[in-house]
Length: 205
Image 1 (cartoon, rainbow, N blue to C red):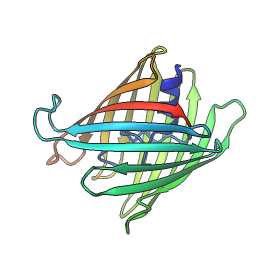
Image 2: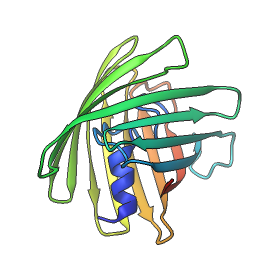
Image 3: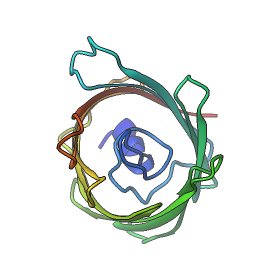
Image 4: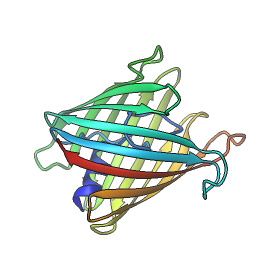
């Protein structure tokens, strides 16, 4: 698995439609964190039209790894809304096959929520299981998989009537940039599916 995919799979945990950690777009429940002083920027475009020819939501996320055990992250929608999150990974097995993490999001609002996630690795597959707590409780499970050093995919399911199913494809370029395409279908049939395109860049500061 390439460095870019490792950072994406190991650091991200927020979907545009369901909360998990203020990080990148898709909400597969990842327990891991970025390495110390690693910084990730995500430019996001979300629309109900796959070609973004109608109105779309633009947002930017950032994540900073701290001491190999924590992440501080934030998201803005460029409309005056800015929120923060904090995640810890207190345990990783020596063989790196298992990790457990927990955290908070919405720290700059009155709607602070919490989450707990676990990750287990089998070959090139990372299996994820999590639980989210806000005004409702939601179970989450999913996986990510690396086809090669450049290509990878992921899928996740968020329970409850306000949850969703999401599927994504990743492409890592040699420059360290990662392109993501994400399809998210809410369980609520009255809510349109979302198409999200993300450009991610990770570097060490």
